[in-house]
Length: 183
Image: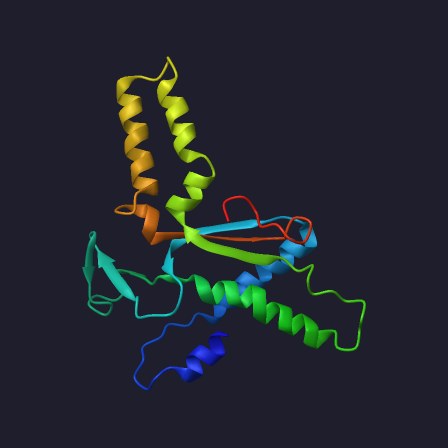
């Protein structure tokens, strides 16, 4: 679990933890349980905590404290922590709340799936085939075809957004066993 990873980290390790993010993702899962929906989160990030806090000003990376209030501060999403908050922590708290109640099932809680890369996700969902179909349409101009190719490459290429951005889903397992499409 994330707590174990934090406790086992060597002295001097820099780790980022976002308790509000963990609580929010659990709220999403509970809302999905209640309303029978799903959530799809796409952002840049990794699996695991590391030192990712940084700031930008005029599209250039600058020191986080260089000019308070005039820089955009950001950090990567720790997708492993979010997944753990849903698949482990939420399950454990549900079990603790319902100790002794044999009728309560924790296996019906939504699960987090992924993360997978944005490129893999979009490709598995048919983005390449859809782009080809649009390009082959008689009404698509050469300029539009070029724009479609450029956009697809930007979204799925490992050198662009395809690897850096990750996708995480929260949903019920179909029939209790199948993950959602793309995962």
